[in-house]
Structures are given as C-alpha cells and as structure tokens.
Image (cartoon, rainbow over all chains, first blue to last red):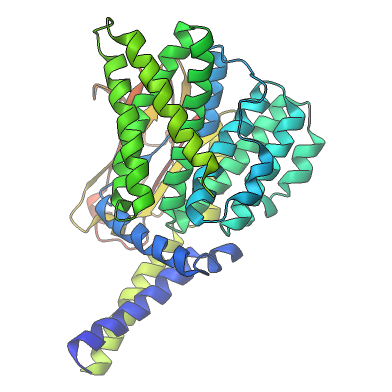
Length: 282
Length: 143
C-alpha cells in the first residue's frame, strides 16, 4: 500500500466515524442522497475548517420579524411570496434561500394575527424542508397538527415557530449543512428588508428605519460566511447583490444625512431586484 | 506497517467519535429547553473541544444583539472536569459578566443597550486541554 492509499484508508475510517457521529436522525443519513447535496456538503467542510476558531451566530429570522413588528411594521396584504410557489422551487439553492423567505413570511403573518396565511406558510416551510431532506424538523414534534390546533393563539404559534427554528438550527449545525443555513438566512434577511422598505416607501417610520439599518451588522456577517462558497456562480451573484445592498446601508448608517433620501431609493430598488430574483428563481 | 497505520486510523476515529458524542443534537436541544425558561430560542452553537486545536485555551464566539432586546446566554459546555469559566463582552468589548467568582452560574440575562456583536469567551481548564470528551457549546434566547 503506497502513502496515498494509506491516507485514503485513514480518510475512509474517519469519514465513517464522522458519519456515525453526526447523522443521529434518520434524515441526516439521506442528506447526501444527491450529487448536488454531496458537493454542497463538501464545501461545508471547507467552510467549517476556515471558521473553526470561533462560532458564527446569526440572529433568528423569527426574532428579526418580531423586532420589526415591535417597531411598528404592519401587515400589508399581498406583499409576501405566495405560499403556492413552494412547489416550484427545484434546485437545492432555490429551496434553501426560499426556505428563509417563507420563514420570514410565516413570522410576519403570525405576529400580525394572519393565522390562515400563517398556516399556509408553515406548510410551505415544510414543503421546502422535506425537499432538503430535513424532514425531522416537523416529524419529531408533530408540528403541523399542533400549529393548526393553535390557530388564533399567537403565543402558542410563536412557541411552535421557535421549536421549528431550534430543530432546524441544531440539525443544520449537527450535520454541517451550513450552506443551507446561510442561504436560508440570506432569504430571510432579504424578505424582511423587502417588507420593511416597501412599508417605508409609503410611510416613513423612524423606528422601522432604525431597525432596518440595524440589519447591516448581520448582513456583513452573512456576506463573510457566504464567501466560503463563492466558487459557485449563484453564490457569487448573491454575494454581489448583498454587497451592493450593504453599500447603501453603510451610507444610510453614516452621519451624512444629506444623501439619505436618494440612497434610500437606491436601497429599496436593490432589495426589490434581489428579492424578485430569489422568489422567481426555480 | 499496514497494521500499525490501520490501528492508528481506528484510534483516531474513536477519538473523534467520543468527542462528537458530547455534542449530540439531542443533548443540546434538551439543555436549551431546560435552560431557556421563558426565553425563546434564537440560536445555538456547539463543537467538540478537539475541533479548536490542542493548544487553544480560550474559545471565543460572536453573536448579534439588537438594542433594547432582552437576551439570555446559556453556557452549555459538557464533559469538562469542572464548570467552565465563561465571560460576556458588549459591542465595545467591555466585560459585562463573568462566572469566575461563582462557577455554578450557567446563564446570563441582559438587555442590550446597543445593536451589534457581543462576544462570549470560554476559558478551557488546563486539565481538559487534551480531553477528547469535552464539548464547547452555548445558546442564545430572547424575549
């Protein structure tokens, strides 16, 4: 056996060890069922090794939606991505990023007492998690019937969303599927920025604007995390769009307020363009 | 030679297995549910100590906070010989909390005064530096 083969043997033994240790749930075993998923997971390992000295913790999209709601963000009918689009997303990329979009839409409807719409988004989230082999998020807690049973009880729905968020967050980290986690956050970030800018376009609310500008920090982190996957064209394009949005947020966060109105229009337009690309990308 | 190499590989794999068992998803979820109380889950982070390298005695992590929001940080470290020392720093890296004087404290509640990144720092006890059964973990909750 030459040196190369010996390393291959060691690698095989290690990969078996890692596989047994990580895939504690049944869907984790199916996680690499497609070539695309395998490629994504390989990149995950690279990203993990680059950031192994510290953890990267992003805020929960549900919490971000809550913060916007507390700041006065009201429900605008028809602004969210129709739940019926969920079945149209085919690629792992579009499923992952729209999972985040729907998580924000679900939170937005729940916090604004739109229970019937919320249940549609809950099912849309399930459709996409199933498509990404993350079925245990819903199965282990029998979540859909519990959500339906608690329609109208906002506190219970928020608790269920938080449970879903925890199951998802821990599962993605346990199985090192960080690309899904980051893409989902990118979708959630864009959707919340879209809803906020659409409302601000019609009526200026300083509290909502402040919370929108606060999102610059998590956006900067997200861009850095996505750069570990920039060898793929769709990631590259996403990073470019998000970086462009960040440029506007940087200007709006600066002390020079003379250019703010013009820059806000630019920001709104950039967010609209990216959001349209995300929800219409199959 | 072949046998030695195979034995070494299996031994290394076993070490990896033990370390990962300390950071199982079920354990982390249970600790989150038990420790967060009325706080809502925001995020969790967990890795075997071995993932940070043998010489690392301080592990840091950043997490995002929003001004005027209430948070709970939970220390979920597992498998250490003693309760691990952890500290929380604000956006300007001012020390807000440390359990140095009372290591039985495993969580810290606060209201963020400013939006930005807070830092949590774990000090790894020298006795555990080479341990393969330790898990560095924490969770964030909000109200």
